[in-house]
Structure formats: structure tokens, C-alpha cells
Image 1 (cartoon, rainbow, N blue to C red):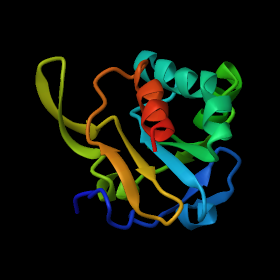
Image 2 (cartoon, helix red, strand yellow):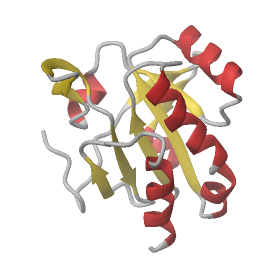
Image 3 (cartoon, rainbow, N blue to C red):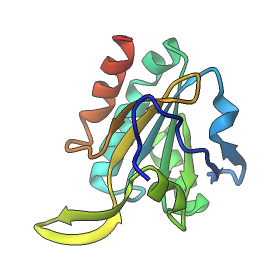
Image 4 (cartoon, one colour):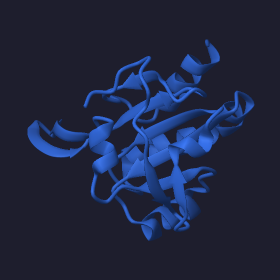
Length: 155
């Protein structure tokens, strides 16, 4: 299933770093940035997460929630959050079902080789549950959160 801007975002419920169930519907009425990343505490993923952290006050000012999703387990997320003081939830998708729904799991190029894995991508879900914007592939993880913020500030 392809993510389409203007269409309803696929529903999901996943577990966060504290073992709590988090559902997309919990944020009805708010804008939600759902970003998919390959692995906790790796260079690109750390740069992206820290950039979201550094821009958190600006996202808060426009009533926007940030949710990071990777296949990592809750304990890995907890260590990542503590190490880098991340002020948002990280959700675990070990069976990659949510990633598949959002087009964030599949064939990708890595170091010149085709492989199956997590495709770094981002979806913005509007207060009405519809997709406002979808980046199928994020080329520069460190710069991406600022692009997401700029898009939201222009709305």
C-alpha cells in the first residue's frame, strides 16, 4: 500500500520505550511527524534524532508531536533516549508491519548494493488523520528535521 498525500494515514498501535501502547489515533487533533529510521545510536540516525531534539520547541509551538519508529526493542530506545536526551517517544516495530504500511520497509541501496531494510522516510499526519506530506526517502538525515519544520511552518 502506498502512502498518498491527502488520504487517511494507516492506523497503528506500537509500544514505546517505556512499554506503553501508543496509537496514532491518540493524537487526533494534533499534527504528528512519524519518522522511520534504521537503528538506534548509529551515525545517521543519531544526527536525525538530535536535529528533531534541537528543534523540539519549534515543533511544540505549532502543536506537532514527533514519533520515531524503528525495529529496535524498547530497551534500545531507552538507552538511545537517555544518551542523547531525546524529548519524544520512540516506538518499536520489530515485525516491520507498520513500516510496510508506510513504505518504510523494502528494497534500498546501501553502499552500492541492493538490500532489504528500513528506508529512512517521514510522514506528516494532519490533525484530521490525513497525510499532509510524505518523504519516501530522506537523503540527508541531519538536515531533514529542519525541512520538516519549514514545511509545517508554511502551512
